[in-house]
Length: 403
Image (cartoon, rainbow, N blue to C red):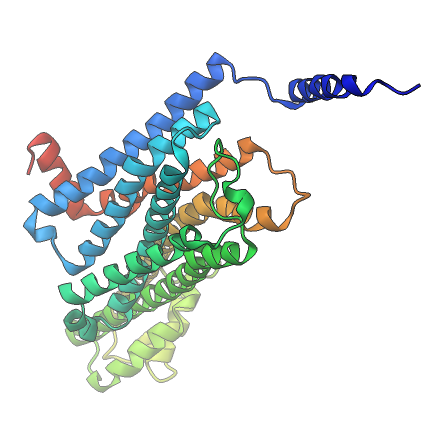
């Protein structure tokens, strides 16, 4: 038996109401709202205060207005704009789950979001490049590291960032991206997704990883060269000061022998950086043409003691070397690790989402990875300015009146 035609509209209305009731998520609880609002406010305020303090310090302290620090200033500007113009609107959107500011404001907000976040990421790239050039080509780069050159690099960063953010406004997006007035989305067009994610993150990520690896290797080589130079100087000075060794022309050969057999001190059997008696005799024999110190009247036991003390000093120098290398690796590891940790989840979701319609990425995951990216703007002042001793002194003077 067929239903009367007049009942069809009523049936559809009832079905639509039931479907909306069944599939509409329940409103967030008051506890969730308070915790979310508090957490997002802490991130935004900390980011504002940290980056503002960096900019105030660069403005007040003249000795900090160096070309290198201008790059840190650009980074602070980008992160401050993110925390002032992007985070508050994003927090409101997260809490209400509805866009209420209109289509024009949505376009402005997405442009600001993409431009400032991309400028922040690219600023990290030019800071890495600047450090690399300063280490590998220090003499020449001192003359190239001019304020004009830094301003050009900063200008390129912001221009590229704007070029990545603006295309959707001129039509590089899908019609459905703007169909829902209660939703504000960045363009989900496949071409733009590839263009924006690779331009804003994946290419800079590869550049940062490659450059910081080269920085570590270059710093490692410089540390080793400095330690070896000091060790050779110590060998030369010890040989020239020793009154017990009359054959001065053997100084270079003795230094070479000391370096060649330094490993004996660090192998099992050596204690407290000195040679055991048997090894001391063998070492003394090598230094004296195959004879022990007792075989020559011009070499006394004090000469062996001097050699042992020198070897102990070289072992300590090696320990310092390894300590410095480890510290350099840890510093670069923290800088790159934080950058990757903050931004990689967001850009993975941003790249996969438009291409995988069957991938169920919840709103909670999207919100978490988005704010994890914003957290990078909060921690950048601590990584690039607050850990710098010159900045630390200036911060104390500005905040507490200490010199």
